[in-house]
Amino acid sequence: MSLLVCIDCESVVEPYPPKYKCPVCGGLLEYRMRPERLRAAEFSGPLTFWRYRSLLPEVKNLVTMNEGGTPLHVVSRLADRMDVRSLLLKDETRNPTGSFRDRSAALLLSNAIDLNYETLICATNGNMGASLAAYCAKYGLLCHVLIPKIMDVGKLAQMLIYDAVIEECGETVDKSIEEAERLASETGWYQATPELNPLTLEAQKTISYEVSEQMGVPDWFIVPMGSGGTIYSIWKGFKELKEMGRIDSTPRMIGVQAEGCSPIIDSYRKAEDSKGRRVGMSLTHAVGILVRKPLQLEMAIKAIKESDGTALSVSDKEIFQAEQAIAKLEGIFAEPASSATIAALKRIRDSGMLDQKDRVVCLITGSGLKATDVLQALAKKRKTAVLGAELSTKERILRILSQRDAYGYEIWKALGKTMTRVAVYQHLNDLDKKGLTTTYSKEKRKYFRITERGRRVLRAIDELKILL
Image (tube, rainbow, N blue to C red):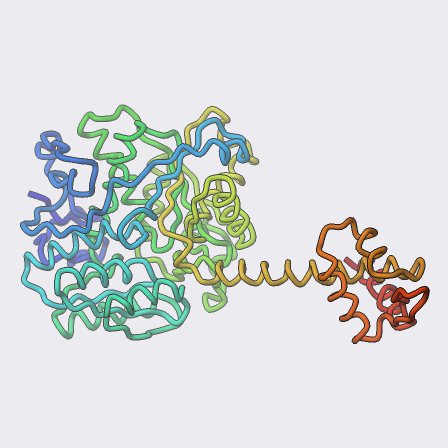
């Protein structure tokens, strides 16, 4: 049987219903298996989440939507870009609702049904709410979700379509978590907030089990950090595998946060400026890891230190560039929080800490289709590119006419015949309407001439190019 134990004072409390805080010292609680049961545990069945049932806290009802068993992609093109020999992505976007949180939803709902709960409460900044809403919809439970003002609309859309009861609370998820704790105490609802239910850690450690079966043990495992529980759960999984005798070594853990919100990094480095930082200013487009007061901070630091790993923060610009690289080179659309792992890999490789021959796994926690900021940026980029192409063509026409007057066919040839003549005449008509060119007839042909206004526009463009 699994025990619920305080990681600080080692006090043992009743395992169910799940609790996250030690009643003796206030430390965080985690489930632990008795050593003899851990060593006797077996993997059974196909490569899915419930293959590892014997290593999870006991449940009678098995809730599932075929979560787990996600691919571990060998990404050679991205590895070449990062200058590492072996790079693999654990692709949790392949879960039923597109994120690693489906593992937790399966275990938490199983436990809730065992305990005869009908309503779940969850504070979430996205993925957990989407997962729980879907699983509750399938199994007929009511899902009450508290969301912050700052969150990805794509994840909210999932909660809405799955008919969750949604309430906005606070600017970031920190306030939502406080309210979820109060509501669960007041109403008696099942507490499904990942930071407040240690079963979440147990569910997520199955990622380590899968990786060990898919490739063995990597040298480095890079994980995005919000509240800190994910990196701890991955580390816990590898420690258990070693205790079972299934592996001989463990990976070094790397935790990553966004520079705009990096409280775990600040604590890990004991940065002098972290004490004076104005918490209200914390912000990043990687909303999945936007947590200002991470409840599992100590767990995250414990995993990093025990594994002889490290932690670092990366900029939103680096995250977005990494997201584009993953998509362009490997065809995987990762959310910003996940892409931070690739941004961190580049930074670590450049620092010389990582050897070229090391094997690296990056955790891709969720799909980029959920992250509307990225989609909006890409749409804006497309519009800008189209507009830029139009402006570039008009500028080139004005450059041609600044040298001499010309008729349409001559202009089309001078442009390199890269577009239809109809398109060229559309640009010419636009320039004429704006007073940048004028026309006259000569030898039965319509000639175009740049106006003084058109020459002023060219001079303004030249000035702008100097500034850029």
